Length: 162
Image (cartoon, rainbow, N blue to C red; front, top):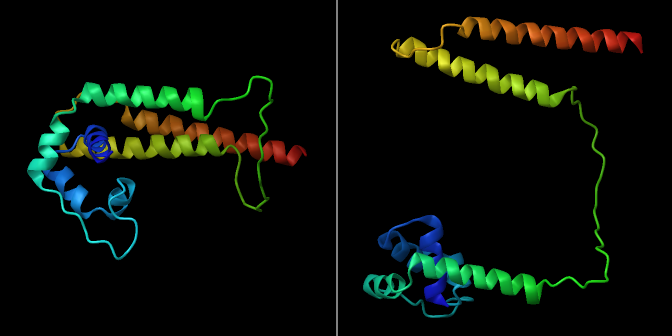
C-alpha cells in the first residue's frame, strides 16, 4: 500500500525521489493516508531514501496508470454501482443573499479581463519595442470603451422605460 501511494504521488506530481523522500518522512497527512501514523503516541517511522528509490522505481509509470484504471473500473462497477430500476434522488440546500450585482456580470468580467490584458500588452510594448503586430492597441481600447458606453446606454434606457 505504501509503495502504491508513493508511486502514485510521484507520478501525479512529477517530483524527484528526493522530494518524495522529504514528503514521505515529513508530511503528516500523507503519512496518515499511507496508514503509518494514525494518532499521537506512535513511534515515527522513517524511510530511507534508497528504500524508497528501490521500491518505487520497480513500479513503472505505465503500471501505476494501469492499476489506477483497474481500481477505477472496480469502483464504478462494484462500489458505486447504480441499481437499474432506481431513479436518482438529489438533495440540495440553498439560501438567498441580498447582493448588488449589476447585469450583465459576465460582460463586465470579460471586459475587465480584456482591459487588463491590453494594459499588460501595452506595458510589454513599451519595454520591448521589437514586438510586432500590436499597432492597433489604442483602437482596441477605444472600441471596448464604446461597447461599454453602448451597453450602459441600453441598460439606462431599458430601466427608464420600465
